[in-house]
Length: 127
Image 1 (tube, rainbow, N blue to C red):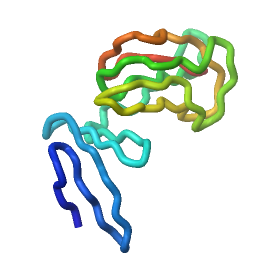
Image 2 (image 1 turned 180 degrees about the vertical axis):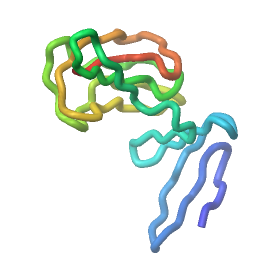
Image 3 (image 1 turned 90 degrees about the horizontal axis):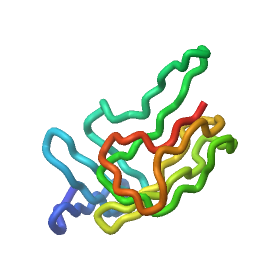
Image 4 (image 1 turned 60 degrees about the vertical axis):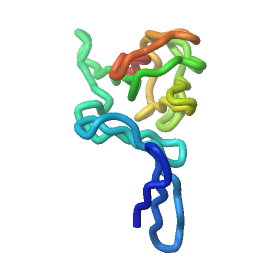
């Protein structure tokens, strides 16, 4: 059962558990925040892979929504594992970790602490 408890806030009850989910955005581009994770209804915002001229895939980690960069936790050349937090963003008074989607090496960092970034801005590239 889902109950609206405030502007953009919902209580979701399932299997005897109750969780709070925050929702923002528009009907065609909705964002949900639950348990430290960000979900976007628009599936075109998934991390993108592109191929470099050397034939290796580069994984671009993008901002899920307009936000402020609170902390960049990696530098070019750093090794990361799937799930490692590489950047921490703040939006709507919530911290949003941007996590590595797979093991790799940081190829480039395109943001700094304090930067204001737009939705889908590439923050870090992994190779």
